[in-house]
Image (cartoon, rainbow, N blue to C red):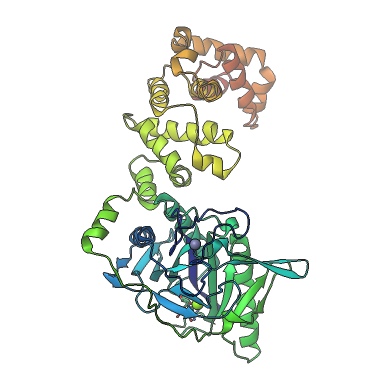
Length: 477
Ligand code: ADP
Ligand code: MG
Ligand code: ZN
């Protein structure tokens, strides 16, 4: 029998409000254990929580970005469980009245992934197992979270990864979370089941808890899918249970303890008032939202005619996108958009050593200077190669375009002169010419190199290539 995979995700995103959800303690990551805590966030008896308004605003923004409806009325509930990461023995969360509901995310293959709900809740402390003992750090306790619950709409693990990447980008764009998987500010529970291909009746699922890397998600889902198929094929039934993925050995295994105790005895949190979000408040938050990644991507591809993969790289980080858009704001031609994209992706990106540096995008070239450079390139006053070299120098020294480019550079190389130099290149490198003529395409590179050297990089390399090829064809090497 051929089986189809069904996955639904519960994704936890830590919000980057300055203070925690019910007290004034800092949400800063790192910091000595148990120094970002107060009686409220460690849940001492008699303390009173107060909801941080910023958390609601951030969560509404997240909901809007994921095409959700925003509930005018919602409330907080107690989710009861006993576990050392939460000393008050309940987590304050939202049960039957979540803040956001009925959203969706569109994947690149055209499939829509439904979002059932987004609710707000508090994070718990962190257990640290060390040398046979267990330590508890409550710094994370009370850090605000949103939980984004998808419909069981994924049919392939690559869809899961794309969705998570989109969530990450979107949350960073609207600045509600940094979504760093390695720091745990994005983690998800992956619900997995299988059903006969073509069926519309879902199989029984298992839930793999707390996944925080794309690679582990890929491996865990694959493993779990095979495990379930094996059970069904041998006539057994899948047990609905909570699993943990053991990354070091690559298998899933059932978990015990709080995660499996499903009776949380939810009831309304009596220490907090209901949450009302008016239409005007939602509109106000919506009006402050920046243009989102998916809309930028569309624009770059359809308006600026940038190839999809390049557009993705440009739109991925807000600062990169802003620099790109500012630089081409006054540009007139499609060629300029492309030139700008190429210069950013080749010259500027090669200066960065990490994704973080790309995201920060701290460079010593202003978009105005970039525009000047693009204009010279567009008017063919400088070659593409010269544009690259100039930009490299600008990045290194912080100089302006006209500090680097001289009058002489702007003369360019006339076509007559270029023809002369191309002929010279062929006369002095007959072997390369013959190689090219006999089908070694790469031989043309050394000929272009010769021309560029002769013209101190001022020639138009693409034009030189065309001329060289024409002469080779004509002269029959
Ligand atoms: P619970 O509250 O017990 O975790 P929910 O019905 O809220 O259960 O579902 C939790 C997650 O499980 C959702 O993301 C949902 O899409 C997913 N899910 C539900 N049924 C299945 C299934 N048969 N296969 C895979 N995922 C599923
Ligand atoms: Mg669940
Ligand atoms: Zn506190």
